[in-house]
Image (cartoon, rainbow, N blue to C red; front, top):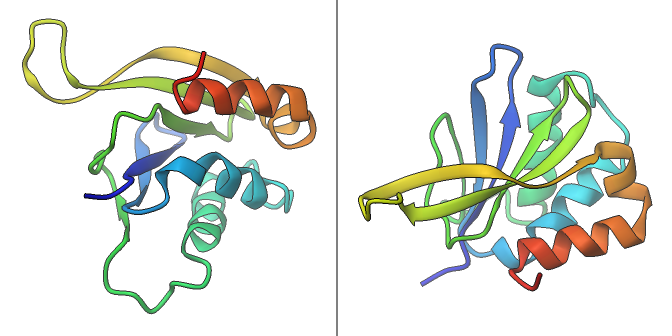
Length: 139
């Protein structure tokens, strides 16, 4: 059991670094918003990933399990993937599924369900509320 979810940080070479939580999936958009609200290193994906991860593990730094960093998607409980794109200064919610259209099992990331500037994600409560509804499957 768990409440697994991922934040993906798009790197300049179009690869992604995934930040994983085993227990905090439901509230992951709030964690991301709080980290981005610090307004630090939005244009530097390596430092931004560290800032977001520090917020994700805040208060749990010494735990052996519960969080991870990977170049591949970790377990996910069908929440959309929160994609942070520092080059374009955007946040996207990417559709996620355990199965592809043919029923093959795996990690499948699909189209963008929501796309917003980082600035609007952290400052506009209406936009954040819309993103949260999509993230939590209440569209």
